[in-house]
Image 1 (tube, rainbow, N blue to C red):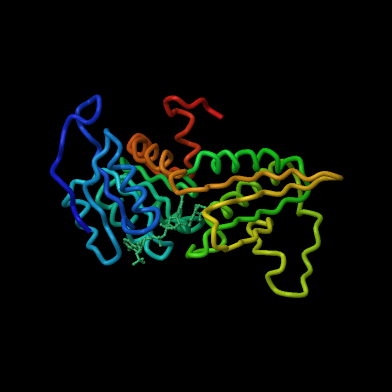
Image 2 (cartoon, rainbow, N blue to C red):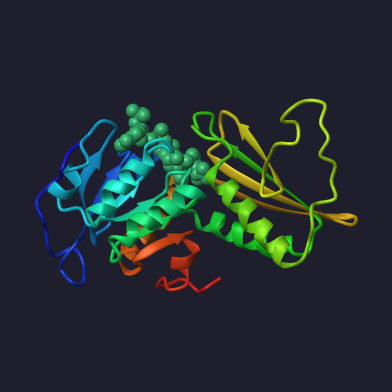
Length: 270
Ligand SMILES: NC(=O)C1=CN([C@@H]2O[C@H](COP(=O)(O)OP(=O)(O)OC[C@H]3O[C@@H](n4cnc5c(N)ncnc54)[C@H](OP(=O)(O)O)[C@@H]3O)[C@@H](O)[C@H]2O)C=CC1
Ligand SMILES: O=C(O)C1=N[C@H](C(=O)O)C[C@H](O)C1
């Protein structure tokens, strides 16, 4: 961990740079995020936090926005600390869903000006894939999710796959679709994947991969396949930076980067 540098002015149009801290700074994503923040003229990287480092360094360094890219077993303690300290948080770490989101809302109730963005996936293509999958899910009786990742990923299924399945299930329910008409019997446990809100989710871990997802939608005599590939972790960085720049303008809890995209400059609302 290293609090970095004193406040500097002059990098942005207003002359003041937003002070950013990265948690999980020495990991694959954290290191990439540090580089991206350092390269952004309107942002200043003032803290890199690794496992075992005291979180108080964030306040000490005057961090305004923290980016969490740690692990599912670490992220909640980090979030609690930041929200209590009034530090906005951009969460990329997977595993913040369900009851954990309710817990974040409770912390935020005591710190109403603080913003938390939980972004299951920062890549624009993945955000759009989730949107397209939810739209298509209304029309197809069958749907399954396949996520494919690098072999060192700590969790399965991916946070993106869980979120996709939730969105697909909600769209199906709204459209009045019942359970998919597909067999669920197996001769071997796990053969049909894990089931998230009624949607089978299959996880592949393989050398050579980075982060990929397919949504397969089946109807009478046809299959629609939606696929996204993150070929490099740089694919996540525009989304990380967008989150960092915007989170302070969105107090409370936001789940999904799509809620920030519609008012992003230079991007038309999809
Ligand atoms: N939302 C998105 O678009 C994306 C999200 N992710 C998610 O981001 C997370 C990180 O992924 P990745 O970088 O590949 O994983 P890594 O394992 O490479 O990095 C995680 C880092 O966090 C560190 N760490 C663990 N606990 C703490 C803690 N309490 N405080 C500070 N640092 C800690 C780890 O240290 P140590 O090695 O000692 O455990 C490690 O350096 C995962 O949950 C992943 O799913 C990844 C890509 C994109
Ligand atoms: O661990 C990863 O690599 C990724 N994690 C996120 C997830 O769990 O969905 C986002 C992306 O898939 C990469």
